[in-house]
Length: 398
Image 1 (cartoon, rainbow, N blue to C red):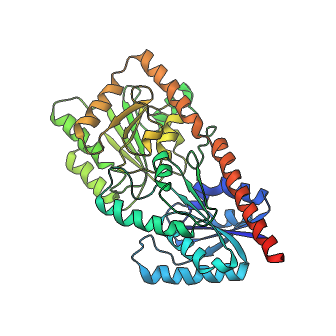
Image 2 (image 1 turned 60 degrees about the vertical axis):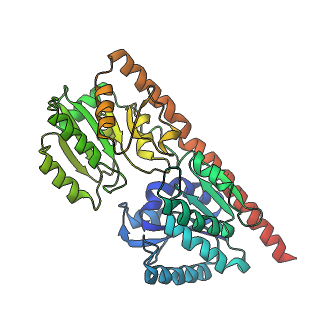
Image 3 (image 1 turned 180 degrees about the horizontal axis):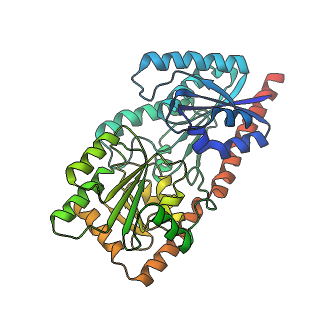
């Protein structure tokens, strides 16, 4: 029996991002195990639903911070037990700490020929990153690469950087166009649906409705949009018909709520919390704002484009993969209030003919990131894994 373990830090990651991979693996005859900190439901999910899908769940005390050594050492021991008990032959790890522990486990069980796949959803070192990221994190990833059989990256900059790494003997790097965008799910709403949804959300037809989707934290940078709205009003601009919808939750929630009150933006900003399905909100927006300082790719941006929603985004290695300035949106410097003001006003004042053309180009630019393209490459990844395991089995028989 072929047992593979998918490893992440927080639970719910598999349900949100990895179900397509699970289907591919099960079709190839693998029994899928999933290990994560089940007490930290970063993405809500139903354990019973995953079990019904044939996935074996395992709680481990892994922590999001690599510096919480007690928890992560305990998780390392728990992973070792799982691998021994269930005869795991391969581990596919995700997230920074999950990737670190997964590859150290690969080193621990190298004599048993445990195969290790690591998907980097955006390295912490990149062009324009702080010096500590481009030294410490780079050196850590370069070191851990030697315990990696297959490395999967999701953007061109990371793929270029992997050329400096030395993977395990016969190691291979693959570049996928993100985790797989569901083009059917994130399809444009009809005008009637948009009108009905805006009515439910209490967004007037005359309002200019902008939406951001993402965890409420420092990196996602929703606060720059609040500062922008405040500046616009201070400069005498009429923002009474500008509405900003924030989809997401996180430890910055209280800070953002305080800023809304402090800036007097209660009439302009609506906080929708964590949304299990953002389509109804995102699909009736006039524009999506994506002010993240750092993105590996940024599925929220792609989902907006796929629904024909023009994008205002910070320029980073992720958004550079799909934002075409003047065609499907515009770039803004992540912390430049003036840039965000200009971007909002530019889209707000586009002639209707150009708006229509831009919406068409939004959808077209997202198509290459569809899950069919990602799945095709992931099938090659897992076929590669299968060949490696077959070689190991043949070696053992000799």
